[in-house]
Length: 363
Ligand code: ACO
Image (cartoon, protein in one colour):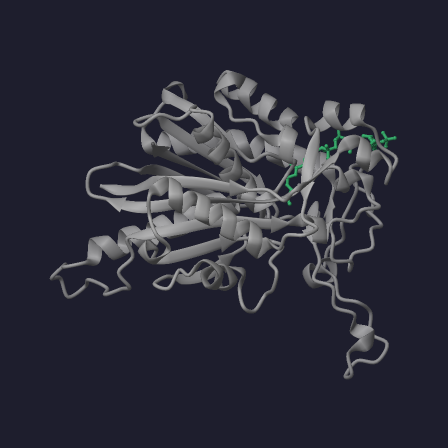
């Protein structure tokens, strides 16, 4: 028994923006972007909201699972770029597609969001199902939860600095969703591994802009920034103060530092989740990693000794879509027929926080 993946879906905005298009905005080239990242184009939402994209991905996943909105008991939305903070992004999606029986909330674990979201949803479902009908006085009575929609929805274009070539070529918009369902027969999720590491050089941030100069109780005060909150300063690749405008609400990244973290994190998470499941990497037929950089995937493939052909690589068409990335890539893997019933599949991610993790399931 366990939580099985019942269906998967994705949605992209209509507008595709090529590397050549970006070369009109900043000093970059198609050659540089393809060679350093593997990205050819990304989709940018100009007519779509995060709610539109998430609703489309969820509807796709429900159709593939042959379920109706009323069948869903829980909705978790992972995002760092919601349409609003209150109501939560999940509440907006719930209302849009009529998930009348679902509780709904948001979760932020940046690009590892999908792994965290699936872990939280499956843990809640397992706890709920296992406590039903248990006579023990210790049994905790809960909401009956049998099925969950877990959706990543990002409009990173709204928190991208379109004048910063170091970041603007990397990100894209989109949504990916998965339906998790309790099953008495299927093993479903075999193991998970979640980890947080302090970002003590602020290599990956997105500040909440709050201009204290407009605050009536502190005339002339400086803008708040994550560096001031943490009492540390961002540093560049040589360890010198990074000198970035810290209070602007854009994704800021020290690429090489994140690259170093990412390559170590992906390898560690993949090994740990296999060890917890008692499964060897050779038995995993498809690995679906966070799509941040094709070079990170190639490095991990080599280091782990898992042929590149067994990794789902979707980054070329969509760029880095943060919390949506792994679920969009999972949807691609299913659509391409790369995952068959009974296959062992690994999801693995890393991102801001810093966060990292992996999840292993039987399809
Ligand atoms: N076009 C042309 N040149 C560029 C561009 C660009 N778009 N961006 C940077 N450069 C230049 C730099 O200025 C630098 O020039 P210099 O040598 O004269 O100083 C040179 O290219 C090399 O820059 P690096 O930053 O060292 O390039 P690198 O090979 O590290 O690639 C990249 C940069 C793609 C960002 C890489 O470091 C990376 O992928 N990092 C990890 C990103 C990641 O995994 N993010 C995941 C989390 S995202 C999230 O959680 C939201």
